[in-house]
Image (cartoon, rainbow, N blue to C red; front, side):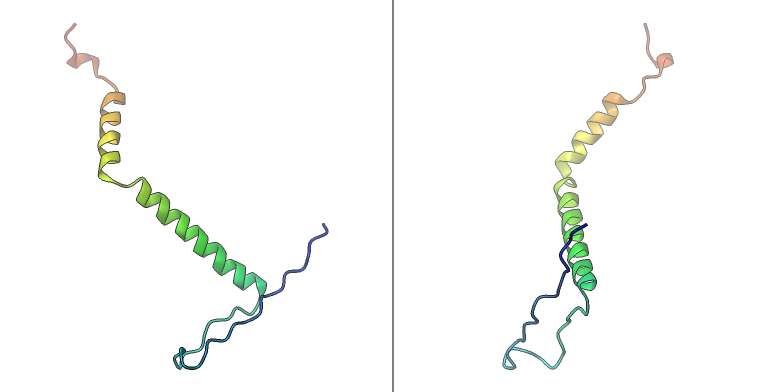
Length: 79
């Protein structure tokens, strides 16, 4: 494959008046940088999907669907 080699972007330094004594995290390799980005995006997608499909209205619809698709016991029916 003819892929370009990945390089880390230039590190940005925070002005001293805005920074605290702690040092900023800077990844040491492209793999570490993209691993952080990958998990950040994956976490955001999972949280978004969970909040989108986890609300009271959908739970009511699921309960009705389970009720309607549940197997019917024939001995309880009077024909």
